[in-house]
Amino acid sequence: MPLVEVELIEGVFTDQQKSRMIEKLTDAMVSIKGENMRSVTFVTIEEVRSGDWGIRRRTPAAGPDGSQADAADRPSGALERSGAVLGRELMAI
Image 1 (cartoon, helix red, strand yellow):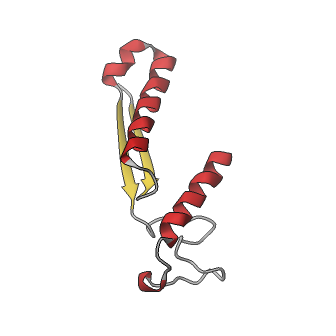
Image 2 (cartoon, rainbow, N blue to C red):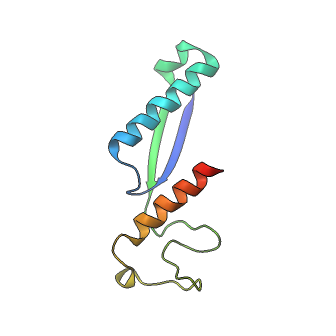
């Protein structure tokens, strides 16, 4: 039985979008191995807390110079915007 594990940045995707991911990933497994996979494909989604990930040697909280800002010093929504930008960059790959 397939187990598909997805890690996402917390707060970037809505519950509806996550449900759609589960549907599409299940459909992908079915398209590869057949309809009998639908009832035994498990998809888990784990959200990674903002700041607990990094790209290009920086966390989303890093300033332009690479320095880390405290959560209280970050502009409201900065991490969510960073996650959304990362998502768009990854989709472009």
